[in-house]
Image 1 (cartoon, rainbow, N blue to C red):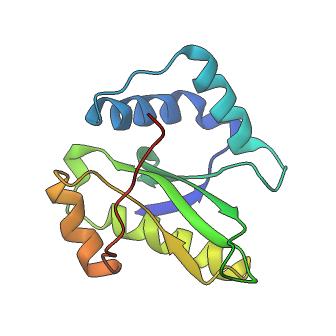
Image 2 (cartoon, helix red, strand yellow; image 1 turned 180 degrees about the vertical axis):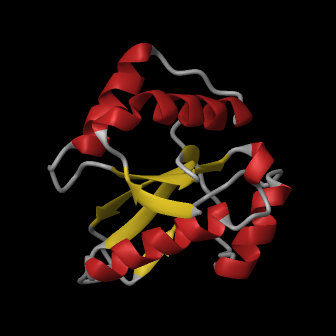
Length: 146
């Protein structure tokens, strides 16, 4: 049975495992201080803090997502940025990613933020198959400070 719920303090070990696997997919390692800070922000109540959801199947943590709300210069209402999305490789194709995205959509609706957006690497073809079904590819290209 699939359950999507907010991250709780007791999820820290599972969250760390899932987030480390997500970061490894993107060839990224972060210092311990970032793990600590991110997890505390997921549990925080500052409106600028991230929100986190854990997906479990029969009680086993198999996926996560992080998202946040922020203002937008072209809109009155806030927008929602889905920053991280991950499902264990052994459960991919079973609807975990879709369920996590739909849970973020529901959270955005509850907060009055009709816009939800996310980014991925162009080579992430497996995830992009899902994204093409549940979202709309935009023509924007991301740049970052050099």
